[in-house]
Length: 156
Image (cartoon, rainbow, N blue to C red; front, side, top):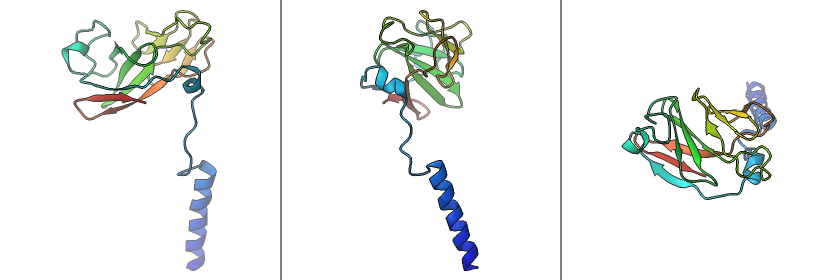
């Protein structure tokens, strides 16, 4: 019996060491060092008229698949509702060829699923910020989000 418990404990410990759980600090995204750090810390109500009119987005931000441009970050932020009360927030500064193309900003395309870099034609998925097509290899810079059912907190 003692041997079985001891073996089980060693197996669990070995699995943690191999996977890095729970001891890892997380891998750093190279984009975080590339694009200048700007403090981001604000709250919005996705159901407020400011985010339901569609002036700076595609409609009501409280519905899945909808998005909005907001001020903040280094050169603006895209907030995207991926559904089930989860939101993503991406820096609009393009990581591809930055700082040489420092004026390029991603914009949501007409499918509402991708952000496109107008300078390189690279596409990024709004679900996770990964490059989808084009020459880009780095992810979009992402800010953290927390939604309590009424307010969306965006921060870094």
